[in-house]
Image (cartoon, rainbow, N blue to C red; front, side, top):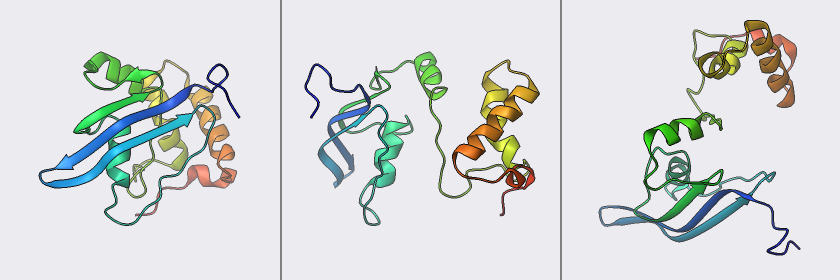
Length: 148
């Protein structure tokens, strides 16, 4: 059992988050901590606030109350330049429509590296292949286009 002294750093820390849309309350008194290195899932019924919670974590929506901190950065009152730097440190994959249909799978995976680094094409392709293998995809998938 971790003590306060050796507790792993949280990559996501939400405290007393409340989310309201008019009179409808989605979250109230929500606390969540995800330590570095942990894998977590958000599970719940339709309309239970899963997507809303994730949107608050990735700066697409602000909670009505409470605090959200990601990778050690508090999200309330974050400046645009800080938000851009933070967004470049994470990846988000949406369930449907998350890939560009005109790019191959390899090109889709490498796109952020082309956009945000000065790495060469060969190195980016090598990194993208490595990432595809990390998630269990076979090499022949890299030249396929997402199905629409």
